[in-house]
Length: 195
Image (cartoon, rainbow, N blue to C red; front, side, top):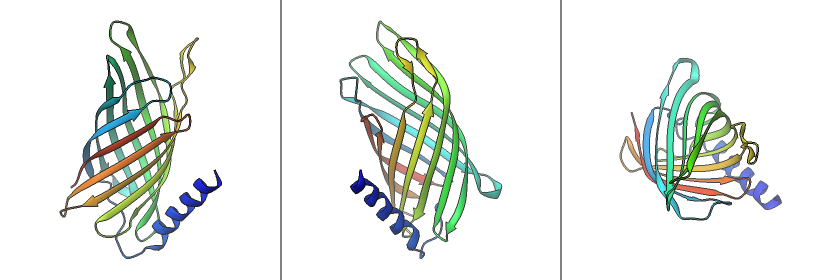
């Protein structure tokens, strides 16, 4: 735990003290292939995600995201629509606060599905390290309430690291790695378009 904390603080320090690039943009769309390694459900869950964000006046933005993965007739998907605010810490670095309305779906072929709605809180830091490289670190807490009396409450928390590297003025590759507190992980590789 101590080593993880030192690593996270090191990343934050790197993000905060590079002041040569402009701040990150919140006008983008992105799509990528995703791979989920679930802690309690066996399988090689693969799928895709698509998301988009649009900047509003006064440092607010809106965002939408859809993630779906499937293996052997088992499907897991998340949909969210959110609003966020970014506070300028440095010329190239912002603190991000975001609240999402979330729908979580877990389905098994010939066995039905559960679908729960809830809210997700996000607190993170984003930095445009260079003109081409952007990085972010975000803590997330999802509350989808009680799935059923047997399963109980669905309240996972996550830590997400993402990197974007521009190959043209508006086009970038992006990589995202998400770790759930209980041990599940999700990784994404895709393309990002800034508009």
